[in-house]
Length: 183
Image 1: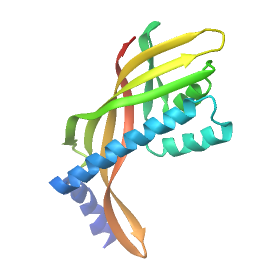
Image 2 (image 1 turned 30 degrees about the vertical axis):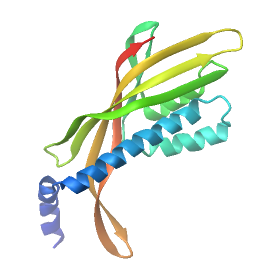
Image 3 (image 1 turned 90 degrees about the vertical axis):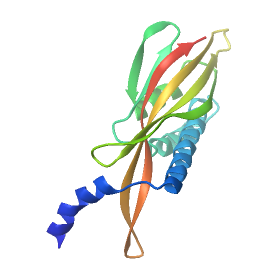
Image 4 (image 1 turned 60 degrees about the vertical axis):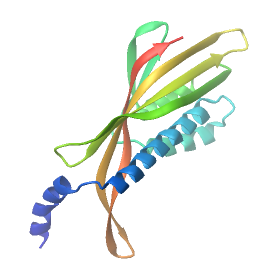
């Protein structure tokens, strides 16, 4: 029986389709996770956030991501975009050399519909605009607006609830790519 299940599981993953109603729920969940990430980034970047609280929020934020995901960092002062693993990005954000940091995400929307991949997962892209402002008491100021594309992964998962196996669609965030930075 186990051999039969192990042989049919990949087939199941490849044939699982998302209904229109389920897709709307998945889209809502993906956008909710992006909004949660926005809140977490604001908390982590805020210099008034206690170190222990920032670490707790970093742990929560990391749970939103697929393993190995990276986040892009850009600046008006350089052409290249640097990419960091998610935890490293949060640690760098927390350590920014400003007295006040404000980060706001806005205009969050899908730019590509979910597309089925050969492995049975679905992949889409959500775009956000991020407004960053850093100021210091000594007069140092920096502001920019960055357009970012967030890869969204949707895959079928299983869990045990009260001894029963329950299947569900899960949404994970992937790489966050910088596509444009402006003043």
